[in-house]
Each structure stands twice: as structure tokens, then as C-alpha cells.
Image (tube, rainbow, N blue to C red):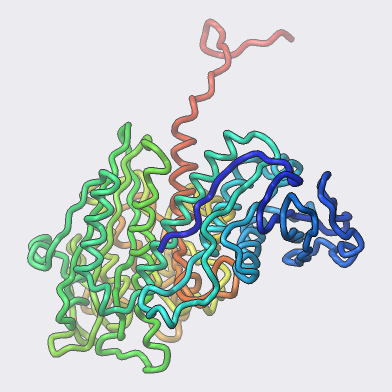
Amino acid sequence: MSGPTLEVREVAPSRCNTPLAVFFGVEEEAARVPDGLELPRRALKDFAGKFRSMQLLYSDHRSGPERVLFLGLGKREKVGAEEVRRAAALAHARAREVKVSEYTVFVDEDLQDRLGVRTTAVALAEGTVLASYRIEMYRSTSGRDEAPAVKKVTLVPGGASAAFRRAVEFGERVAACQNYARDLANRPANEKTPIVLAAEAKKIAAQTKARCRIFTEVQARRLGMGAFLGVARGSMEPPRLIVLRAPGRRRGRVCIVGKGITFDSGGISLKPAKGMEEMKYDMSGGAAILGTFRALPALGTLPFEVIGIVPATENLPGGRAQKPGDLVRAYNGKTIEVLNTDAEGRLILADALSYAAKEFAPDAIVDLATLTGAAIVALGHEASGILGNDAALIRELREAGEATGERVWELPLWEEHREQMKGEVADLRNINSPNQGGGTIAGAAFLSNFVEGRPWAHVDIAGTAWGGRDRDYYKRGASGVGVRFLVEFLRARAEEKRSPAPIPPPRGRRGASRSKK
């Protein structure tokens, strides 16, 4: 779906003829009425600037805004990108409630100075576009939200308008790509089979000039992807392995991998009926990869190549489905005892990760997957679990999570956990023993056997892909988590690689620095 058009321009509040003007306030500071606006100041006495608080006023003045909305950001020292993002979403929701087709947001220069022009502008654009999302793709006209859609949002910066405009354009594009990922995940399973996901990948490649290769079941079998194909056996829908490549300027590669189970019944190890309809979301990791590739042009030409891999299949209990106790051989030759067919995500990722490591020898591999319900037990819906074999890579991803509000929290991954995944009749088993616990860690410990020693991080998004609390810009359905997170990770990594190396200090004649005593 398409969101509102975002425009950046400079205009005085008193000369802004808009149906609704939005101003931000902070806690414990009196709300400031902009010069030239005639408003009942007494009405603002009840506005304390607390986070998410609102005060809507009407103006009788012939010119200027018809309505003025004051919106609280909370205590000034605690205001960050997430508070701005949510405030922008609240402004959008209020605009829909009062049924205006456009509105204007005035950005305090102090806010820009404190957070930075780019951070402020990106957060405003993201909150606005993400809040505009509605799950209406399959509704008849009569069943849709009666409130008219907002067509246009004008953002008025407090300064540095050129940099502000560029950041708004970036935030708008990336948020739209996250909404695209939400659309994919929200589709019912019969509308997004593996073949449909492959077709979407081809469209993205055509739009972004990326290269796309789709492996069929026959081709995957020739490659020796027994773990991936074992999961696919129970479904009549043919599986697809999607590989996207976005070229970069210099040598270097980053692989991003997403779990693409378009519906997960659990296979022979059948899930309970209650809530099974939510298993259409089990391809949210794959949706994040496709959304990220759609957003890559916003980053310009990167100093490294980005490869996206999505193993896509259904996991169903058909007559040919793999059974508990079956053995499969993965792409890297390791054998696996399938003790639980509902631990299928790690099986398809095993082949995808091994293929990524062996085929592309990347500098970093990051996989996103709705892998374990244990992640929800450990972290709830507020953060994704992260585990891996490279501390620097995990640090990069944690910083990306903090910047985007898509936080990750590291769990341990020790050799003891890897030992627990060793099989009795095969190299590995796909679950650990019931009394060992640590289901999220067990999933990552299993996957660590397929990255061939490459720097790797696994992000378990089972708790964040859907079902989380109302964040104002996420209401219900899929969150599209991972798109802004991965884009920020790639952006920051690219900036670091573009930065010139520090100039070494002068050295003495014998190669050592000298100083006078």
C-alpha cells in the first residue's frame, strides 16, 4: 500500500494555512505558542508535555492553521529517536481521527540540535509512514476503515533544510519498504506460496538492478540440499531457494539470510490448532530480506556486495512428509537426525547458511528467523534474541537495533551448547534434550555448524515479527521487523568502510617514535 506524500518546506506557523498544525512539547516546560498564532493560552495549562499526551485546539483566526495539536515527548533528557518516531505516529493517527487530508508538523530546532538533523528527520518520516499502514488488501470497499487517508504531510524543519530533506526522503523510502514486508507477511499462506515469493524477488531485482537467481527443487537436489528439501517433502507447493545479489564498488560481501516458511503446521510433529493461523508469519525473516533489498537503492552504491538468500517452502504433514527419526544430509555434507519436524526453520537455514558461506565466502553473515517460541519466553515481544560467533558483528547489530528501535539482546552461545546438538546416529540432531532447556540457544548452536567459520550472527525474531505491544506505528499483524534494522546495519558498515584510515604518527629513523626526556 502507498502512504502519504512527505514534503519538506519552510513556512512560518502564522502563515501556514493547514487543516492541522502539530507542535511538540516536553515535560516540565511550559508549552510555547509560536509567534503570530492566536490561541487560547489557558487551554494549554492542562498540557504537561508528558510522553504521548496531546492537546488539540481550534483557531478562529482567518489565516494560519485551523487546528493546532500539541504533542508531548516526555522529559527532554530522555527524548530519543523512538520517542520522535512514536510521536510522529500519534500525530498521524490524530489527523485521521479529525478527518483531515493533510497536516503540517513543525520541528523544534532544539530537538534537531540535540538528536541531530538526520536522526530527527528519519524518525519523523518512519513514524509517519509506518503509522499509515492498514491491512486492507483483501477487504471489500464496504469493509475498509471509514476514516479518509491522509494524502500529504508537510514537515517544517527548524534549520538545515537540505540535510533534513535528504534524511526525510531516506526514512520515507525505508519505511515504505518495511510496509512492503508487512504486506508480504500479512498475506494468507495460499496467497504467498514459495513460487509467489520467488516472483516478488524477481520484481525487486528488476526494480533495483540486483541480480536474482531462483533454484528449483531439482536444482536444490543437485546441490545436495537435503535438509531444505526434507522440510519441503510434505507440501504440494514446490520449494524455491531465492538468491539476490546487489553489487558493490569494492571487494567484500555481506550475506543476509531469512527464513521463508510460508506456512508452518509443524509437519508430522503437528502444532496445536489454536493460533496455527499465525504460522503464515513464519516467513517474516524472508520478508525482511526482500524488503531490505527493495530499500537498498536508498543507500547508494555500497562499498561491498550484498547477497540475500531466502529458502522458501511450506512445512506440512503430507503423505511424503519427513518423520521424527528421519535422517537428512545437509549441503555441507553433515548428517542430521530430525527428532522434531516442527524444528524445521533451522533445517532450511542450515543449507542456506552453508551455501552462503561456501559459495560467497562473505565477510559477515546475518540470518533472521522466527525460529523459537523460547525467544518469546526469554525476551517477550520487546527484543529479538541475538547469538553468534563474532563479537564485533554482534556489536554492530546491537547498535543498529538501538538506532531503529528494533532492539536485540545477546544470549550466550558456548561450546557446551554445541555439544548438546550432537546426534547419536548422525553428526547432529535438530533439537536438544527436553531437560536441557535453552531452546533459542539450541537453535543457534545447531546453526553454528553451517557457517564454515565465517563471522555470523543469528537474530531470532519470533517475539518481534508480530504480536507485540502497540508502539503507535505498529498496531496489529506483522511488524516488518528487520528491514530498518538491516538497512541501518548496512549503512553504518558502509560508512565505516568509506571512512579514511587514520594517519599513523610520525616515526623515528629506526621505526620507533622518539620523544625528548
